[in-house]
Image (cartoon, rainbow, N blue to C red; front, side):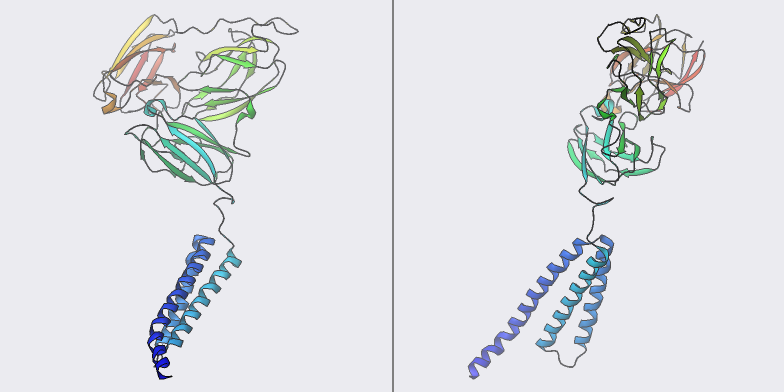
Length: 427
């Protein structure tokens, strides 16, 4: 009999702490599940209140003259009760945590910076998302040893308030950027390191933004359209998505009977880049027509409606303009060089009202300085871009086909290094 009591006396000091540890582990596990089920703010409040109750209970037990095993078990039980009660109240009062911006799983969109993105930009100029739903942006920097990121702005250019700035990623590497849900509208984005060349827009709308309803898309970039031929169905209204990727530059799409551009069939509103618009082009009879940007007429091409080259149904056949030439037919020439992150001159003289071949010689090694180009603006406010030359990875040279300019003073700079600049006198 006494031997059994002795065994119990020996085991109790071991069993009581072990039992208490097991109970504490179960309580902590259950409590952690509750905290994970509620919002961050609610979890913090619940944890603080529960901790305060446990500390108060421990103080009461510690204040007794004699602390027994039963007292310790009682404290553990009270602590567990406080934790479970507070967690239950939090779930009832606050509810389980929902995904940011309206609940549900975040929508996944992808964006890549391919090799050479510093000059050529992202793989996409437009991203479409469902409005007011959290976004998981999978960014794939494929550009070896070059840092890129994504910065999103609450507007159509970089002057708008910043909504999100992703961490810089040195390629090749992938990262997931968590973006908040976006209200319906257009949002500009760019790379923080290469803002002049790596940019685009996010279109947020019901069902995934302004995707254009499956109709044709026309892109304006670098003061040029991405195609010189548009195909439209005959005698049918068409919704065309116009994607202007030239920052701070206005473009539009206008369709004319012929290349004299005297009889308009459709003139789209001007779109200031970077932005997209949906043009509702009215029904046009079968035939071949002419299109251009009214601001920059050198951006042009042909519209094939219905059967290519067919006559205009029910009327006089539309004149078939010749395809735009591969060059401007310029006879005037000029030259400029870049070396040591500087142009060799800060002033150029060009003839008025005739196209010019501008030879650009980039003598800087792209690995050391990045690419250069020559862009011409109406003035140094950079609001109206009249010509944007392709980026050139040095050392290399290129012949730019500069369109005819009216007499006056113009401003030029390198889009990647704006401190490289000067003035152009056209006379």
